[in-house]
Amino acid sequence: MRDAEAFRLRWLGRKQGRLKLISEAWLKSGPTDARKPLGIRFNQLKQQIEEVLTSVSLRIQKVLEGEERVDITLPGGVRAPGIPHPLLKTMNEIVAVFHHLGYSTALGPQVESDFYNFEALNFPPNHPARDTQDTLVLADQQAKPSRDRLLMRTHTSPVQIRSMIACAPPIRIVVPGKVHRNDAADATHSPVFHQVEGLCVDTNITFSDLKGTLDHAMKALFGSSVKTRFFPSFFPFTEPSADVQISCIFCSGAGCRKCKQSGWIELLGCGMVDPTVFASVTEARRKLNPADDAYNPAKITGFAFGMGVERIAMVQHGISDIGHFYSGDMRFLEQFA
Image (tube, rainbow, N blue to C red; front, side):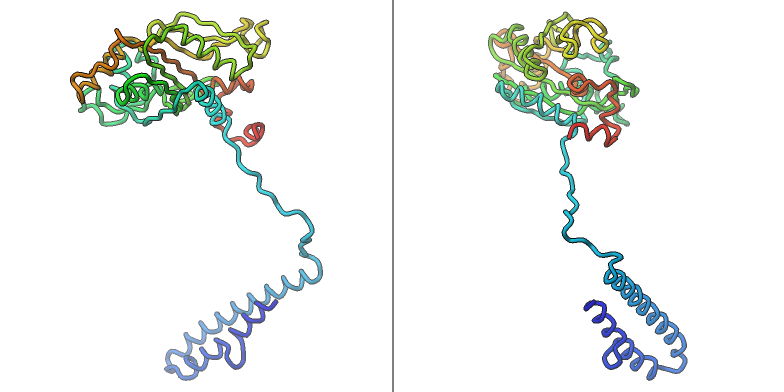
C-alpha cells in the first residue's frame, strides 16, 4: 500500500508530481504547433498511470477482503533435488567397482581419427569387422590419408590406445563414455549409447586374471550368488577373445522369459590384448623415442574388456526397451529417485 501511494504522489501529485512538471515545462510553455501532439502523448501517459493504480488498488482490496490472502502458516513449496540419470548412475557404479580394484579412469574425445578407432586396434582398411561398427564419418574427409580421417568413435577402445601411447606399463584403466553408431533405434539398439571398457597391461598378466577380475565385477554389480561363464568369440584387438555371460538374476539360472529359458544372460566381451595392438602402440611411441620398447609383447601381456552401460542397466532394473532411457519421460525417470 505504501509503495502504491508513493507511486501515485510521484506521478500525479498536485505540487511536485511528474505530470504537473511535464505540463508546466512542455504544454504551457511549448511552441503552439507542438502542443497538440504533446497533449495527446501526455494524456496517454496519464491514462496508463491511472490504469496501473486502479489495478493495484483492486488487488489490495481483494487481499484485505480475504479473497487472495496468503496463509503464511502453510508449508512452503519444496523443489525436489535432481537425481543422477539411471544410465549415469549405472556407469558410476561400474567405474566404482574397478576403482576399488586399483583402476584409474581415462577419458578421450568422441570425434576420433581412423587410426585410433580402427587401425591401431587391428582393424586394417577393408577388414570385414569394420562393417559391424556402422560408423558415422565426418564430412569432407576424402582428401586426408585413411588413418587421419575423422569419425564419431564407435567404441571407447581408442582411449586404450591413447593411454598406452602416453604411458608405459603397468597400466590399469577403466574408460567410460558415449559412443556413436549408425544403428536404427529399436528396443535394444540406439544410435547413441554408452560403454565402459577396461585395460590391464603388465608382466605375467594371464587369462585367469581376466576371469577373476570380471567374476568379481559381476558379483559386485549383481550379487554374490551370480555365476559367470566364458565362451569363445572374436574381436580384432584381442586374442583369444570371449563373450561373458552371467547366471540369470531373475530366475537364478532356472530359465525364464528374460533369459530366453537358457538360465544365462550375455553381458560383455573381453580377451587378451592382441600383440598387433602392442605393435601399433610401439610404432606410435617410437616417433617420440626410436628406442622405445615398453610394449614389447615378449615382455608384457594384458587384457581388455568392454560392456554396454545400457545393457547392464536394463538387466539390473528389468527394463525391456532401451528407448526409455532417452525418452525424457518423468514417469519412467522418477522410479529411480
